[in-house]
Image 1 (tube, rainbow, N blue to C red):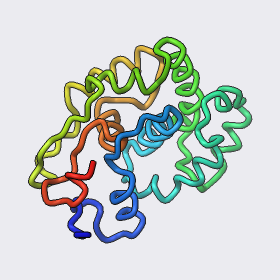
Image 2 (cartoon, rainbow, N blue to C red; image 1 turned 120 degrees about the vertical axis):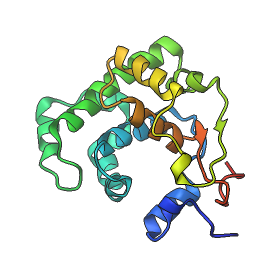
Image 3 (cartoon, helix red, strand yellow; image 1 turned 180 degrees about the horizontal axis):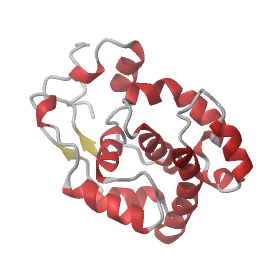
Length: 187
């Protein structure tokens, strides 16, 4: 296997594993989509590697992103989580996970699944792009703007257009692996 990968993923074993095995692979599992959306929100203003290194702590502290469990978290539970150095200790981000879980469950009720709702922004088809290098990859698109507006309207937090685009990349709604990356043709 060629080890030519997207430039952002080189040099750190955890980043390389994430890039090679997860990033850009289409996800249709509601729980995993919710996890990715929450982690992208936690990443706002930070580097993704920071969140990636803390992902297992997030999973442990946030009930593996099981929305039906998260909506039961009390303010006291969330305050305790805020004390844990294994996550980003931002009050708004921590409390947004519970709020997003409530909104997520409403979307599931309305659409039958979060997957059905979220993939509708790309007409249920991966948007395959061709980028020679990172400089041509956008920070947001009309699809991520539409997703952001719809999520905010339904009560989600930390879902701006840039966060939504990063989520779309990570969850495989868009293939932004560069042309020279060995994963480009695999996802």
